[in-house]
Length: 330
Image 1 (tube, rainbow, N blue to C red):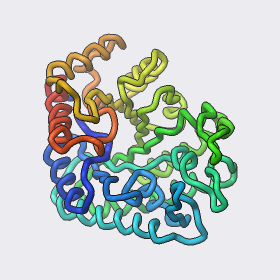
Image 2: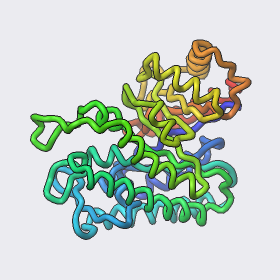
Image 3: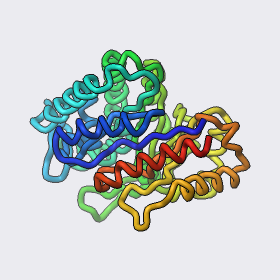
């Protein structure tokens, strides 16, 4: 049966909002609930801060220009780690009786390399050795993170780790600006891009979890992502080109998972109905020559990206929409 999930982020600006987000996710997404991210609490709670929090081997601090690696964890890095531990405590308390599939998210190695700076400035992307060290530190940190989540949620029999790579296409296309803003970092060649992803996705797999990759940017190289070891692809349907559709169809036929983002992340006007969402998914499957009855739970529907910028009413409605639509597609 077709299932439903969400990308990760939720609205709110304090710990009470996180606790409420956990309740909403557990209540609205029975198929594949996830650890909510509430970036409105500040940079340490955002995608980058959470990714850095997972890496025990590297120190970082928050500068006016953004995150920067340092010799030792700064106050904001320590805050990011503290928030992650606090969130996991809150999740453990609310989900202690949960059994089934569960998803967690982390920023990917190329998105971190394209946004985090070296100690003396400019992005890690500019230094071959630094970006290698980052990817390896992320892989090792994820091993501990996966073990921790498993310990806290013993009823979870399928743990999914979604690696967020919104910057991957820009990294490969030499579209990441330099510190001055006047230039662009050199393109990373596909073999290196694949290798760094392999380290991270391989670590997830070796710990018995299932690696997915999410990107809502156009021109994401889904073939490269699959080749690096991703077993699930999470996409924004609006951003797909002809080649992307073919790659996703091949993934489904190969028994891999596709998460199809079909519900808006910001409050739409008018709101779509269940029927409209279902018809859109069916048109996509028909274009690929696929039958939802034969695909089963390899296809999931979700919002197109995170919901941090949405209103609370639309957040709840969006999760209801993907769940009810998945039910109609079964």
